Length: 316
Image (tube, rainbow, N blue to C red):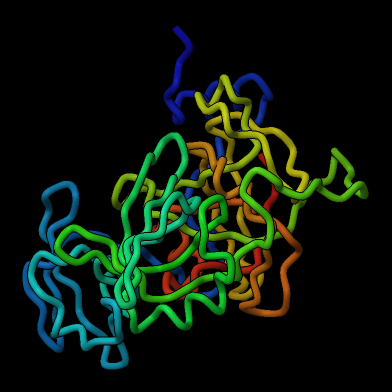
């Protein structure tokens, strides 16, 4: 049987190519390192937050005076309820809280059905072969802003928004990039001016909650279908080269000037369907070149509520 362990694949590739095994995580030299701390809130006060990590360990972090939190809207860190799942951007070796996102979710998929109603509406989404179907709620209060970014609010078109999980249901709060104007099966062809041996590829990096909570990693659109166990992989308007599961990507956040080595842990078949741009600092080339886990995205200086940053990846 083929070995599907990402760590083992990386070790075998390094041995076969005669190069050192690259360590994962932020690369020093871009200022103070950012640390992503994930867990469930046990208690929160204006000066201290206590969480339980996925390993069952209790972590106590000091809340910086300037720190803010987001849970559908901006809230004070002390107002976060026990039981909220948080992604924390921390400084000082991961001990001082700089920013918190609580119960945040990324809602990315293909619209299958839009429920009737004049106010809150439910939307059925196909989120790819690994994530399946998902039902989300679009509250009436955010529907106007959402429709500006998603004019084709009908089956067959791509959908992407950031939301919050309330009572186990995802509620949309913020649209991310603008909806592509084509149906999800009609991805534009990549540009012809592509050199297959180019060391860098530029485009958009986004995040997804389709990873294990607290995991570091990336979903990449151009994997072999048999390798990724995904028949829908292998489409991208960015003309990315094929990589193997377990490859290391050196991801550069052009906006924040931060770099991290991130392993490819799953296919990004749905990310490859988006031929859009990130507008966070200037305008990125078209195409999503990597979909990061929340922890990896935050450690690169990304804001979960903004949804993307202009990126450059070095292939490894």
